[in-house]
Length: 217
Image (cartoon, rainbow, N blue to C red; front, side):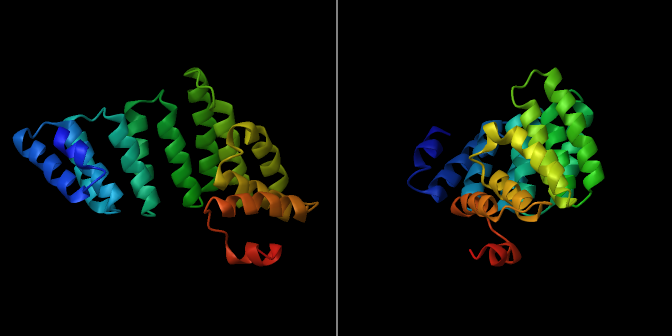
């Protein structure tokens, strides 16, 4: 395991071999499965990464890193339904844990199940507040803002996003959606729309062609 960790910055293939060697020596070594998955993530081989994450979870189903990483990989691969299904399964086991509701709401958002996404977001906010998480309200406002944008309720979206601005102003996706509220709102402000959407673009957020054309980006 240690040789694998030391090889990560010089040779991913060597690190992979070492981590697999650790698994061969001890088939219940969760950290070895997690590190193997991490190498596959760095290689952008997400199918193999999920395979090793599942093996890790089979040994320790409470492995939060593995569970959260599995969901993120499904998002990365555009497998939003699978991400949502796993998040919901974890929610059933840990009903008071807000993070699983967050991922479930995100999966519903990406699948355009917007009323359900909004309901789960509000449920998530309550759960996170009970956990006394500092960003409970801001995270909820951010999600609600994105949902309202997709619903084309831009005034409601802007009010929600502005409540999250202090915490998320450096986030590319946040700037994109806030920019949309100024672009498509009842009283468009192209200067502000362009400011926020350019911020998103500079952080490598992919701007749809129709938005780029409207703002001459």
